Length: 469
Image (cartoon, rainbow, N blue to C red):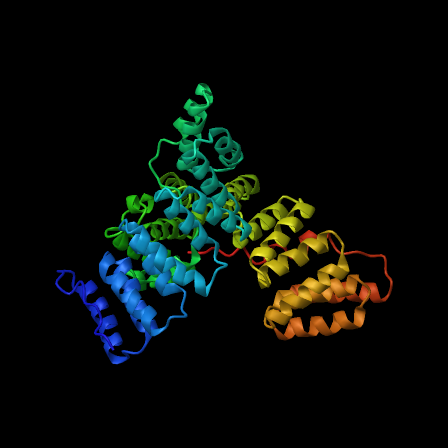
């Protein structure tokens, strides 16, 4: 087996040397492990050693040729070095393993266009579009049209995108296309919106994991846990220390932006949890100004507005984020919850169903969908949602409680009683248990008495939208 690639051992940063040294020793201890070499490669990439990362990824690939990640990660780094032929060769090996990963086709189209292979690039963007990369693929198609001098075709693709997207590169490209068509006033307006030099990008779930190998990520994970547990001041101390090495401005750069953006976003969330909502909003807004393509900023600022009971503003930010990332299931779920808060139940149901298309079988999304159907008095559908919730998460006490209520309202009193008994066993709120018992007795006796309006039953008991650090 080849020796591990060695890098970073001469640096004065003792913490980084120790971190990389442990990974190198892990490779030596298990020389046949592709996974260990891949982790070392991700650490090299995340900490600024691209050549060592490429060599290590290729070693990992030779040990496990069926793992998509290693040739894919190598391809991305090769492209950043301008080695597009080598990058495409590595990307082809990755796509032979998984040809249905849309970001890979977006990269392929981007690199082919850089190499002036316009027809091949268009085929790649078309395939990305078929795989669900709608707006990103349209931007690629527009870039091909620009390269071919088809400016009207580019404008037709870019104008709908620009109405929804705040990304400066979209507006800058539209401005160039409009200028070529002689639409000077429109071109000046688009160009003004595209002054920031930020490159266009897209969400790539597989590359995001490399950020966890940046030096300091273990401390970041500890800080996230402290924040979620309520120890926000301790968490913020760690975030501030880490920002000394990963400052806010790194969030707006093409490379290694992920950790810096996460630090800023997590700081915003921690301040929000500490009750400093206005400052938390200010931080998230600053994040959007630095990198308007980073979806977590929109989720965070929306949740801050939710805490202020300003559901209209929360919804506005979620919709801005979804314009950039329309396949983000978590964002669709949040949108559904905010629409629920506004009493727009049918629209909330549509949003929650969209969330389940992109992130299937999420218990909390299913729960809120069931709760929407309670408001719509669709008892059969509500019961099916809550039944699925408790199948996935048998310890979800509120799921059992609302399953009992939905079954009861639907006339299935015996089943409702059994569900209520399980809710009690799982620790459901005692007052809610008693309220439900009274309602079931009324229903069993065909009493016309009613409970208070259903959305007052347990509004304070509903699980809050989960914030991601």
